[in-house]
Image (spheres, rainbow, N blue to C red):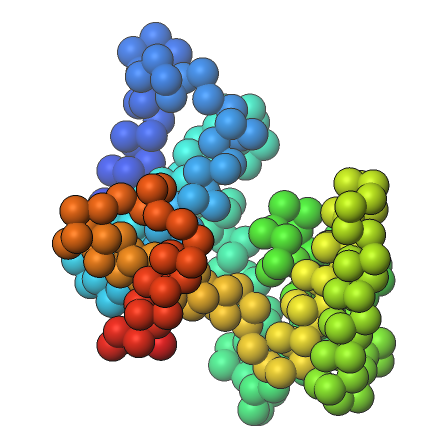
Amino acid sequence: MTDTSVRQIDRLLAIMKRLRDPETGCPWDIVQTPASIAPFAIEEAYEVMDAIAHNDHAAIPDELGDLLLQVVYQAQMAEEAGQFDFETVAKLIADKMVRRHPHVFGDETGHSLAIWEQRKEEERRAKSEHGALAGIPLHLPALLKAAKLCNRAARVGFDWAEPAEVLDKVHEEIAELKAELGGDRDRIEDELGDVLFTVASLARKLDIDPEAALRRSNAKFTGRFEAMESMLTEEGKVMREQDLQTLETLWQKAKQKPGLR
């Protein structure tokens, strides 16, 4: 780390401290709490992902800065409460990286996922977190959490042998959902959740990130839908005035456009 980068970190910490000053700080920043700020960390993390996905090298450092600010913000509030400070945060992650990489910083040779998971399990036990599912964050996006739950269960042998078996389970869950349609809303939600969870398990079995797969489909849908809007605009029409058959025809045309198949 260069002297300049160290100075910029110190500058950022000082700025945050000043923003939180109860007498001269920013009125909005002063009244924030760890809970009120926490959702912004998730939002900023996704903006980092978006900049990386678009290979936007001008935006990436800016978005990373926004994410770093969330760490600094939480550390400042914790310091005010006498709990910990930014230096503690940096020390803990540095110690963790050294601990989890004995092949780099210790005497062990070779890197393996088993060693990494062993270190993480030791850390969970030290926090009195026991069981194969311990330590998975409560507020992860539901699809991502489903994938992590399935991964953890599979590590201890609770798994299907082949992807085809999971696909059969998907069809089974869909049949159960169909049986509930038109009935109790709570039952419908429950069965739909089972379908989504089993699809996440299928993605794991296929070694596919379900979040990435869904993001890809989201982008594809967006491109096709916007192509439909463009075709209608060229004809001086608006989507809400078209019947479903017309929209389906436009959808099929949009699917044939380059990059949208």
